Structures are given as structure tokens and as C-alpha cells.
Amino acid sequence: MGTKKFQEINPVHYEQAVKSIQTGDLLLCSGTYLISEFIKKASNSFISHVAFLFKWHNRTLVFESVEGTGVRIIPLLQYVSNYENTGKKYKGSLYIARHEQLISSSFDRSLLKNMMGKAIDLLNQDYNQAELIKILTRIKLGIGRHEDNDQYICSEFVDQCFQQIGISFPRDEGGFIYPEHIAADSSVYPMFELAA
Image 1 (cartoon, rainbow, N blue to C red):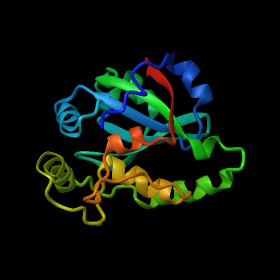
Image 2: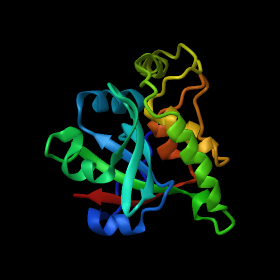
Image 3: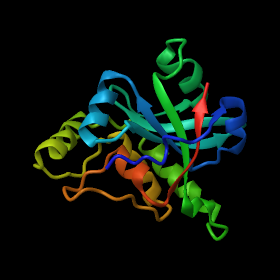
């Protein structure tokens, strides 16, 4: 665990970055919030959150599941300038990546509508606090198994959406998936660090 492939990539300013972002790109976060630090330490990773991006009417939006809110859509711009309406950027580093299947010239981009449909269907589903505790317990103590339900931590939500285009991310032996699994996947390629 503990992928290093995102740690030495070039920062790109937001205005330039959004020109190259495509629907289906991943947003990987290394937060410095208390829960972020706990997730990073427990998973031996510097990645604490994962979401995916989509383009809509000249905007770049984030589909994600976050504690306290659940599945939501927010503008990517809020991550770099007004995160959680604080008037400040997200506390931590932000990385953009792309799955190799989305780079392939043979990929049928019309399939992305299936991924978007699934994400829209899951809007307002709860964040699974209990699943996060189970994952952290599993990592530290090696006990517990994943159980499917209608609540999602960030990585479960992303995985569910990507399954709609034939992409499944690895899970641990207990069936859990967390941001490190997606970040470390050999088919996920870092593009750049997102600078404010």
C-alpha cells in the first residue's frame, strides 16, 4: 500500500487544468483534515478521498460521496477557492488521474452516459459512516467483511459508477474498497496536481 505515483507530478493551475479534464477523470485528494489524516494513517496511504469529474455546459463538476452529506455534485472550482463555503481552498493536495480505458481509442465514450446515470440515481444516498469504521477496523485488526447497502463511502461510490462502463477497481480480501485501491490501480494514470 501507499502508492507513490502521485507524489512528484507537475502542478497545473485550475484555469489550465480544466481545459484538459474529461468526463470520467478521477479527483484524488490528500487532505489534512482530522478524518483525512485518520484515513491516510489507517490505509498507509497519502490519498484520503476519491471522486470523479464530469463536464457540463463549460463547467467541471465533481460527483462524490462525503461524510455528513452523502452523494452530491459540486463544482470543482469550489475545491480550489471555496471548499464547504469557507472562502478557502480544500486543505490538502488535489490530483487528477485518468483510467487507461478512457485513454484508449477503442473506448466508446457514449458509455459514459451509463456511468452518469448511475451517479445521478445515487444522488443524496447517505455516506456510510459505519462502513468507514469497518474499513478502518479491517485495516488495523484484520476483521470484518464488506456488506452491500444503499450507503456509500467515496471509493464505493466511484467504484459503483465505474462498473457501469466495465471498470472494477480492486478490493481487499474483506471486500472493502478505499481511496488507496483506486489510486494504486495500475490502470490509473496521474495527469497533474491541481493548483489553486
